Structure formats: C-alpha cells, structure tokens
Image (cartoon, rainbow, N blue to C red):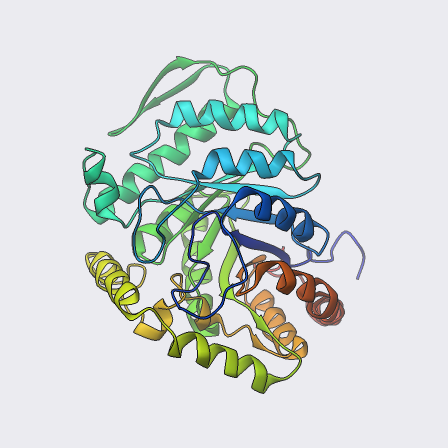
Length: 377
C-alpha cells in the first residue's frame, strides 16, 4: 500500500486533569493533581509518548466529587505555551460563551501556539451551573440547536471576511475578524469537536462538527454511532465527513489479572454518594430526550464511576490486549482514542513505552490487509 492510500495512524488524546478528584469517582489512590505544575509536566510527557491532543475539561462549580476546577480556555493556552507539538482542545459551553468572543480568543491562542488550538463544543448537562449563574436552561434538543448555530458562527467568522449569520440564537452583521487563525496545511480553520450520544448530538456531528466524540462504548455501540453520524454527513452533502473520537479509561498492566483487579478496586472503593448524585443528574438529562438516547441514559452505577462511561470501551488488560481492542475500534471507524488514567504521569509513560509500539505494529498489519474505508481516514 502506498503512502498516498495508507490510512492515517490512529491518534491519541488524554483528559487534562484540570478538575480535582481525578478521572474516577473513587477513594482509590489516584496519583494525579489538578494544578498547573503537574499538568505542565504531564503535557510535555504526553507529547513525547505518542499523544497528539489533550482535552481540557469544563466545569464551573463543584459537583459530584469535583470540588475544584481550573477554567478550560486559560488552562488550555497555558499548556499550549508549555509544549511544542501537542494540540489542546478547550471545552466550552454555548450559553456561557458568546461565539464571536470565543472566535477571537481562539484566533489569538492559535497565533500564540502556532496553530495548535481546538475547541470542544459542549451542549451542557449540569443545569445548576447555568441557573446559579442566572442563565436560562434550555430543553435538551434546544441546547443542541444552539450548539449547531454556535459551531456555524465560529466557522463563518474564521473563514469569511464579511461574516453574516441569522439564526434563532445568534446573529452576525458583516463581522470581520482580524487576524484570522493561523493558516495550517489541511486545516481550513481550528478544529471543532462535538460529542454526545443523543439523536440531536449525532445530527450535529454529521452536519457541522469536524470531530464527533463518543462516550465510552463497546464495539457495536460505537459502530452504530459512526454509521448514523456518517449518514447525516452524507445527507448534508459534506465533502469531508467528520472524524471520530472514542472515550476510554485505560488500565494497562503487565498481566490481565492485575488490570482487572485494579478495575475491581476502583469500583469497590467508589464514592457512592457522589456517583449516585451524578447518576441521578445525568440519567435525568439523558432520558429527557424524546427517544431516550441521550448521554448516560443507559449507564449503570459501575459505568458512572468513570463519568464518561470509560470502562465500557474495555481498554483494560495487557498491552497486547489493549492494542487488539484499539485496532478493532480503528477498523470500525475510530480516528482517535481519548484516554483517562488512574495515575496519569506514569501510565502515559507506560502507554508510550509498552502499548503504543504494539498498536503501531498491528496497525501496519491492518493497513496492509484492508482497503481504505470511510472510517479509516
């Protein structure tokens, strides 16, 4: 297979622990920290161990074990300035950001980082964050309609010298942003990520986003989302369909028993009141969709100990076992795996040393066996 036809390598992102409490709601030891000094070193470690992206979380007030949190956009810029190659995705909420103001922030951050900033448009599930700030809380599908307009406005501002838009939530009247974001080859504008599980989220991903993020899923659950989102992209007539990222909590150990024992300990030591509170809040949010397909609508208590269903992806076991699952997800359409860890610093180093080389070996074998498909760009 020539370089021109070879599918792009599977990419990797990690959850930035800019929120206290780690990535599991459990009293198990988590050798991680939400402060800047720790995260600066972690970002540098990640870009030297095979990670292309980092995703800064967005949380505005304490909830469900996350008692403290650093704001996502400022924290993302700090990490960009501390690294050389890593692309940092800042999570943002429509309704708490005006899209033109965010577009300007991104353009400036893009110049400061030489074209490495991206955004994850989060429609929101935590009602109290909005109401405590005196902002209206919209019904589920209305939040996604607002996000759809938000994404369109960002793209219009970044790519047009005379940006105009007329929607139900946002208006532009001959707005001209200068400077525009950095001109990066094969990137028409800073990348826009958007996630979710619901019908509305899948529609938005297919019609508007550059990347669609999925919560943790097994093989069939992920395949279903890929097919539906690509169907929406085809209906929209998009020349370039979205790429796909999948969340997973990775527990790589020298033996499968050790990895499974770690998972059992995480769940056994779950902070039950915090998990139950999160469970009640997010299941209500997921079930609020008309067809009950919202995020977390079918998550169990055990799933929600990792609050984005990361255990469901089952990236748990030996490096060889994890590599096999990663390759199968790539075969089913994944372009990127978004990973969380118990002990970030040492486990990212372990991933780069022991897991990634096997993934690359198996990826080369896969690429020689199968033709390029829609999900292996």
